[in-house]
Image 1: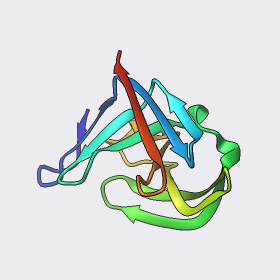
Image 2: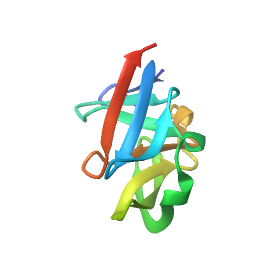
Image 3: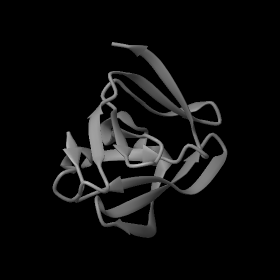
Length: 121
């Protein structure tokens, strides 16, 4: 799916392979249903369904940001395997029209986690 104005294109599509997210070697999310968002010149972002994440390792943060193309982002801290990272995960609880597929999904900052991509399925 494509969204955003012509000068800020956004595409969202199924990743089409398994994805595991680890913190200090411990799994914080594992899915075969990830979405990948490509937005202008930014690196691709993986969005993982909440039900495929270890939500007990994530604590809601007070931090929020606003994107004119996606809406208000809520953040989570990671606390897993002795590692803590503040505002390391974000989610759009009520995304704007054109990107509603990312509702109920989480995205992880790569500087805090390791991504492991499986074979294409």
